[in-house]
Amino acid sequence: MKNTTMAAKPPHAATRTPRQAIRDHLRDEALTARDLSIRIGRPEREIVPHLEHLARSLRAAGERLAVEPSRCLHCGFVFRERARLGKPSGCPRCREPHVTAPVFRIASRGGGKRKAEVSRST
Image 1 (tube, rainbow, N blue to C red):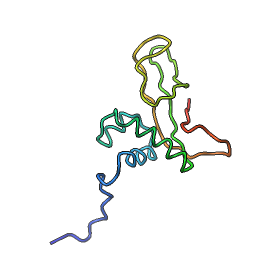
Image 2 (cartoon, helix red, strand yellow; image 1 turned 180 degrees about the vertical axis):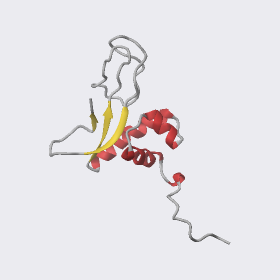
Image 3 (cartoon, rainbow, N blue to C red; image 1 turned 180 degrees about the horizontal axis):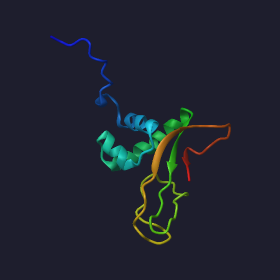
């Protein structure tokens, strides 16, 4: 006999596209591409193109993809001007390979000023 008192099931994860899953996770908290990869079960190399597309989609919806830029763990260089969303392979200042991954989150657009498609926070 079926138990009819069970709570409603959440939408099955397989019904969401990877981009929808990424969007849902970034609305909840700030995450790296690696974190997203683990949570949605897709290779990390697939995440960055989805993030780039998501940034354009969010812009049309009045939101933005906020990015906390990568930092060099050796000299402290911050990759503020980096256009690509992937993790840099090394620091341009000290040439060390130890850099943090950028962290992404979805933020609402505030104020009347026109902002860039991808917002970089410091």
